Length: 246
Image 1 (cartoon, helix red, strand yellow):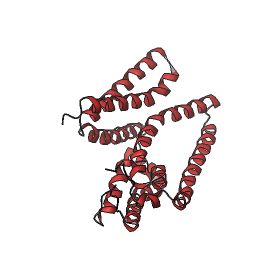
Image 2: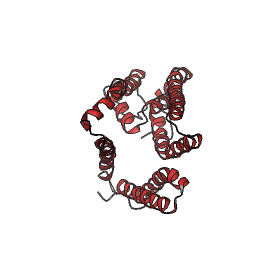
Image 3: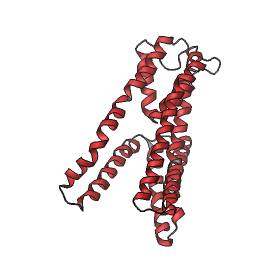
Image 4: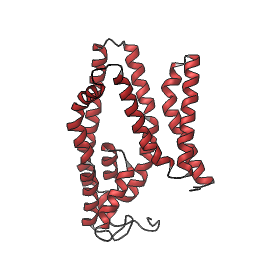
């Protein structure tokens, strides 16, 4: 734990002006990629025959749906800032967005020198090792995404074996499997996590049911973000009040 009375000396390096400047280009590249993807999605949508209203509705839905995950990343960033400093936390969560990976990676780096995150006497070499561990450890899925994504559509078509009706089923099953993989780890983690997942799922089902019955488009757009935020609030409330029962 970090001491309230004093700040570890390595954080002077971790929050230096030079480190802020060195991480800025990485974040700018992420913002550039996002703007390129948005422009391509908009232009491709028009080529597919989508109207301006449909495009704006899709954009608004995407922005609203990103609120929940953004809140979770922001909370994780606060923990990361306290241990590795603002610049590195800003850069790493802009690229990867997973504090569940970044904190253990940083801990693994400093532990090679006999330290633990938050120790006041962490050396500059140990801190640099932590940053390299976080950076190099996260390159695997970035490289896989870069070189593997162009071939995913061919793989999906091959799995469908020429039967067009199977392709949506395969895509839906893959998406459900991915979400289930992440959710099972959270459900088994403790009572707050289980309550958060269950509440978010129930809220999502209720909102979508109401939206379908009353044909309320804006409710469909806000359903995912609302379910995530409610789930987070319930999880925090359970952690503060009853703690974890397993």
